[in-house]
Length: 268
Image 1 (tube, rainbow, N blue to C red):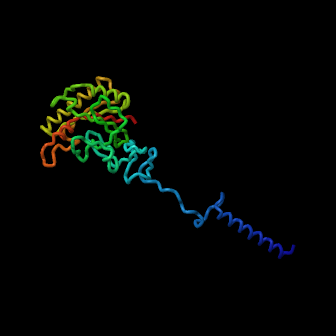
Image 2: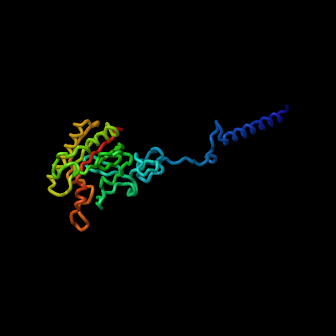
Image 3: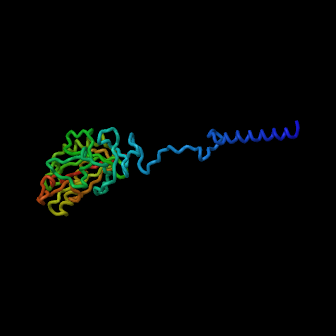
């Protein structure tokens, strides 16, 4: 072969190699790196800043600032999210349901008007058997994420006026059976409350005595709990307004506020 022919052959081979290499570099196959122009735009969904999915509840569907819930109080098959918290005193800080809760929150009878931050606005599960228990039940989640069960007893059904001696114990006995079969092993707090009539000192002392009596009854009759404590809150945490719009006393609101609450924080 002539010298000219050899040069021509080498040039042809070199050009072919460069063309093949260039194609491989833009194909996107293994061993090649796509150029910025050839890389498709990302279709990944950005990760939400807050929230984690719970069951069918995706964090991407939560309202701004909401936290996934534990309870399906609306009955739609999805735990209902919570928005913010509310402090009910004595260490009881509960998450608040998001949005309008009027469709499933508790409503008092006799036209009693709840105070804005009333614990009674928490929803209550329908699947709890309250046979023999003269109380209302509430379900909530505390700020640490623990499930909370609350029973609200009207003091007039448990005690004589001004007394801290339990009258009929049927409700307490049925309550112990409910706790032992469904809510065993939790931390129980008994919370005594009075209405705002009388002096603050007398109300505080009465609320403490009543809460302590209920606590002792639970302990003496075999309640299954990790701990049982009691606290008196006097008239500092009303559920309902105790005066009418015209300023006159509202006896139904006062009766509503005379109560004992049994709060069970369930095991994690």
